Length: 97
Image 1 (tube, rainbow, N blue to C red):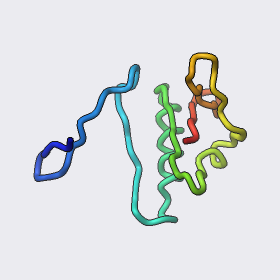
Image 2 (cartoon, rainbow, N blue to C red):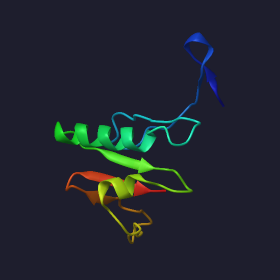
Image 3 (cartoon, one colour):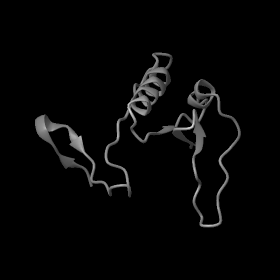
């Protein structure tokens, strides 16, 4: 159930992801404004600073982060019912949802 936050915005209750310290979301209702470009460059910049970074492009109609990072193929489930991310540039994990 949504909770009320500062200045009336809606805050969703959430369960933390194991091992994830921070989440940065890049979004817009409009297409073609550079969301994927900003998200990809932000991920690369954080990785260059030595941060462990994961990038999930959840655009179900045409994810472009895989193209920008030069990765192809589909992630395959392992034997533990998990889908490990593909990696790009040796550092960035990418999950295609």
